[in-house]
Length: 360
Image (cartoon, rainbow, N blue to C red; front, side, top):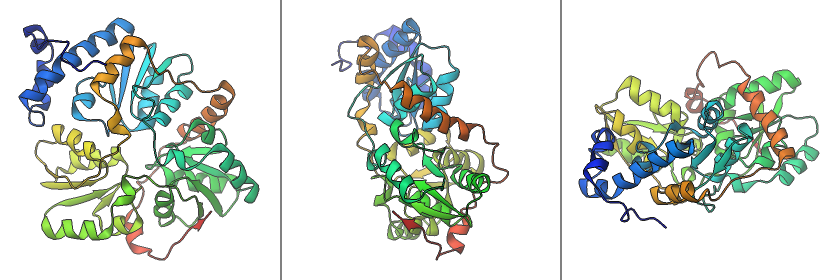
């Protein structure tokens, strides 16, 4: 395993990585950079040599996100960008279900994940067999599935959704199917938060993200007391009680956009820790308070194993073609929807305290 020490911090490396250093130097120490820069330079050289791109999720650490990421953002956005790319190799700096989604949308490309153990508590909470049983229990009801799921779950799905468009997708399929209830899986809290923004009845699964479920309303109220000028931004995978007391809730892209456009003096991102680190590099006018939680799966990805993946072409992610074809259809149905006319109204979460879901 490469550890960076095999590559020297030479004048050539220093010059090649200087623009990146100028970007991250407020958040990375010079000592760290002397170890990281040689690996960053070598990874970027290998990408050119092998016609590869690196997809860096918002929860990657800054040296990956800003140092070697070709496309950065949320999981679906990364996969869509990779599909447009002329690259032959995709390295997924994220977790396994993201690599599967990239393979689904780019079946002719080689998709690598630097560490096979990079899983997801939410994605592992449900299987394709579970979805088949759900459909037997609720015949005729459409199944909307969060993209944070495995390929076999997507293959059993009518339409996928993201945290940003879940309300739109739920209301669309309810109209198209002519039903007043929709199955929304697997994130229980996303489902509960969506239920407070629509009159469509929601049937949910008890899946949770181990990062976001740890936040509670008491945490947010303590932050408000300690930092009265701070804007509290929460991810919809958090419990509804958190969104009730937050100032804003939205996807990782929505949170980034909020900070970059509104430029709050002080902000708290209630999500995975590295998100704040990455946004802070570009939002130089905003102070970030960081009471966040780490995702142990995301943190399995490092510069070292990204390098190893490129050198050895190791840990290729494959999806059975029959499953991939069905999963691609559910993702494409979502992609083909027009953009929502208005943003999700998370203010309704505060106004409608008694909206509930049917939990499977």
